[in-house]
Length: 116
Image (cartoon, rainbow, N blue to C red; front, side):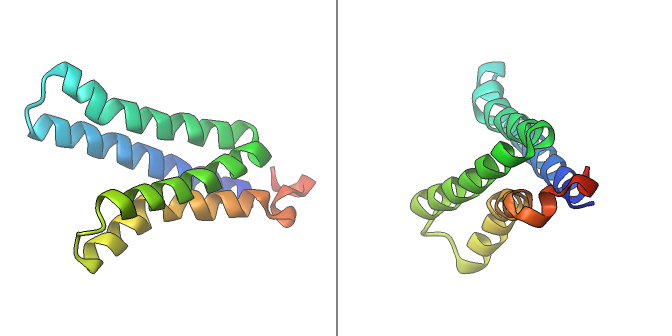
């Protein structure tokens, strides 16, 4: 059960950010190179991370935890000037899902045989 929750959360997280990047690039009328750089690369990286966690839960969980911390640090460094409400919203949608999903995957109980 825990793995399916993680799969759902990571899939929703990855697809949301892939969609958000593409929609933002289209809204800003970027050329296809801009769409690729601005939208597809980060979104596809998130999709790959979600797939790694799907097929290899333990290493994927560690990767999700690292991703969550890296995203939180990156956002804090580059967008620390934003209002607190904006920071909380973005961090809760970009960094918190992979962090929580990763913690669930590396937690010993989530890796028992009955949780496939």
